Image (cartoon, rainbow, N blue to C red; front, side, top):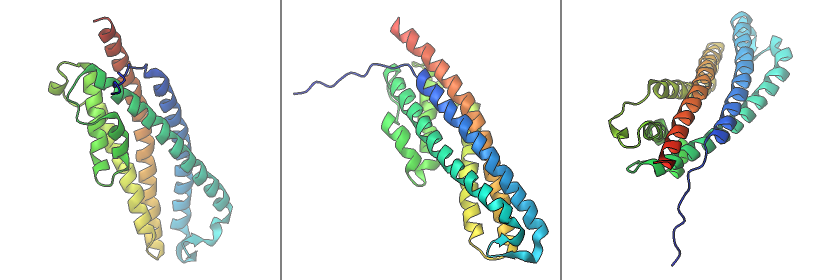
Length: 220
């Protein structure tokens, strides 16, 4: 019978650094594509009836720049997601060694991000428990959810929902729908930018809290 290998907590700071770098790169990409989308909206408002097949005749100079920005945005989104989820997994697994009773394990702390409908709440629950355990491993259930985590999750959801809504509205024909889709996309990009900025603060604070908790546990 094989003995179960006991997990030894690992320093979360290296993965936190990677997650922060990913967030910064994504913020840059979001700012660029958001700016180009705003220019797109201004052109749409002045194009009037010249909008055909979803693109105004005068947009040609922007198409290549927007295409490159879209590729950079998607690449940064993937890199940011991978690095962030690596940090989520590490901090959750560390938290499991500090206390018991957490409902979301390290695997699902990552997996819930990809489950429809459950992704609206369960990833937040996992991070919330990780944060509270890292603050006080013995009394974590009695602690309130940090406001920073709530704000980050709110902007994160706004960005994701706004992006989906923009795609849905953009499928309808007509200049008005195209302008509405573009405006919603701008809101989505703005929310995504703020969410990334809040994520950086969240990563730093939670990592610092957990590092202190792990150091205290090591000498207990």
